Amino acid sequence: MFRQSLVGRLSFGAVLFASILLLASPATASVAVAQDGTGSKQQSEQDTQETVAATIEAPSVSEDAGEAPSAEEGAQEAPPAGKFSGLMFGDYYYISTHRREELNGQSGFWFRRIYFTYEHKLSDNWDTRFRLEGNSPGRFTVADTIDPFVKDAYLRWRGDSTSIYLGISSPPTWNYVEDFWGYRWLEKTPLDLQRFGSSRDFGVAVRGSLDSGKKLNYHVMAGNGSGSKSEIGKGKAVYGSLRYDFSENLSVEGYIDYKNRDRGSKHVTYQGFAAYQSGGTRIGLQYARQEVDLSEVDGEDFDMNLLSAFVVQPLNEKLTLVVRADRMFDPNPAGEVIAYLPFASNAKSLLVLAGVDIDLGFGIHLMPNFEWISYEAVDGGADPDDDLMLRGTFYWSWG
Image 1 (cartoon, rainbow, N blue to C red):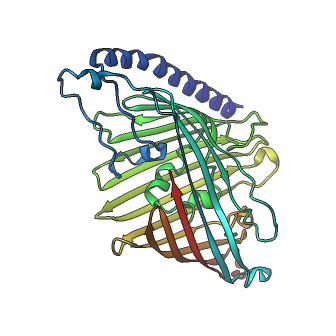
Image 2 (cartoon, rainbow, N blue to C red; image 1 turned 60 degrees about the vertical axis):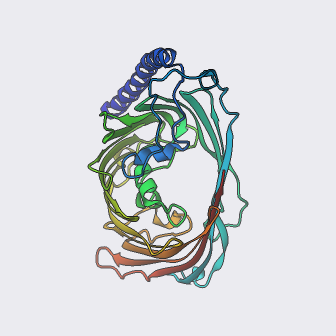
Image 3 (cartoon, rainbow, N blue to C red; image 1 turned 120 degrees about the horizontal axis):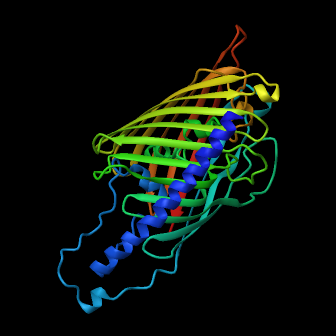
């Protein structure tokens, strides 16, 4: 009861905090516009790019030099009508070997993601996004069609150093990690892959910088805790991340969340991530721990600990080498239901993946790659056989 009350209070506090910022800041912005007469320019078009403010170079915003604008420059233009964009990626896969005999030798094509997005600028401070996603089921034993669902549906207010979201948007769980990784189309980030959380939630989020140099960045959210699905329970979720950019090369982020699920299970997740880049090379190191309390549903509590590292190394203008290793120090009870790459649910695991990104231009990429999983049994049992999947991965985007 105390934790439920705590989550409720934190959720109310997040909404109240966002409301105060929203009520206070537009007035200040209006005065600035009235004094300047030119208004502010639109910031970056993708909300995911905000998460790499220091490590990925941000679009420049021109400063008013103080000169009197001409009549043409001073005239206010109507907001643009909107923008459509999208992407698709998938694979031709071949399962070379698998611990489940029925999957040995299986092959085929699938789409792991299709996005169709519409974004509309309502004013200098307000915009909205609506995004649909579709993907092949990825369960190997079930044949089904690609059914679209709503991935993003939010209203956003943007200030100089703060953004407020209302609706279905990204929690901070792996937002920055995925941006820095840069190869979601090759594989999900470790916490996403191992189902430590969801890439979306319905709620209120606030993100921005705490200092004038924009080195200390935060992202907090209070939401349903049910992903993009409808809410049917009393439990809620709160999320928070804090990142410090030591320089344009080095950043460190800490993260924590608490979820009180609808059927009584409670999840607490901790994460630390260090990111380094120089001359096109990117190196990431990540540790995460999740504690799952099932005492209220007569289940057995369990913890999961994960360590991951990756290197992205350009070979030339068109070729990039990508290598990653994920170590699960505990079995994942949900391992067998992981789409596209099921894990044994009764053993520790080591995932190694590697590929070469071939940039064909025009937003088109091809990547030959492999994913290899080895297992270590717990409690003295026999180690499950290794899994090896060979893939030709394709990606394109537009808009």
